[in-house]
Length: 145
Ligand SMILES: [Fe+2]
Image (cartoon, rainbow, N blue to C red; front, side, top):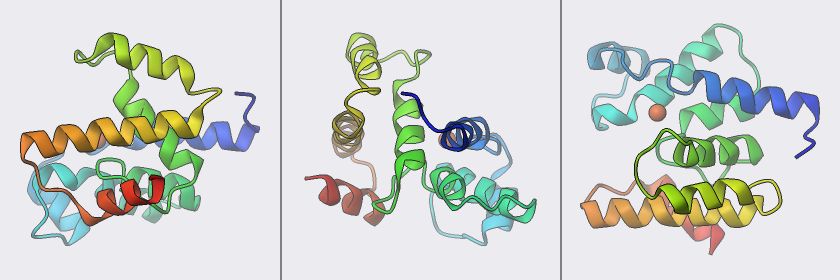
C-alpha cells in the first residue's frame, strides 16, 4: 500500500499491542479500566490503551485502534480500520477461510469497501449469535451505510 513510514509503524504497533492484556485476569482489567459493568471480553482493549497511555504512548490513532478493537468506532481513521480488518482477516482463524482470504487480498486497493464488508460480517454474526450490540458498533455501521 506504500504507506508513509509513520502510518505503517502505527498499524504495526496497534497490531502488536491490541491483545497484550487479552489473557489478563478479569479483576485486573476491571481495576485498570474502572469498568464494573461491561462484559469481561470487552475490557482488554480499553485496558491496554490505558496502560500504553500511562507508559507514554501519545498517538491517538494507535490508542483508539486498540481501545475499540473489539466493538469498532465511527471515529476511526485508517489505523483503527486496518486493525479491525486485520483482526478479522488474519489467516489463523478457522471460519470462512476462502471469503476472508479474498477480502484480505482486496484491502490494498479497496480499503474502505473491505472495511465495510468486515463490519457487516461481524455485526451480522453478532446479531445471529444474539450478542449485545454496542452503541459504538451501531454508530460505526450507520456511518458506513
Ligand atoms: Fe482482542
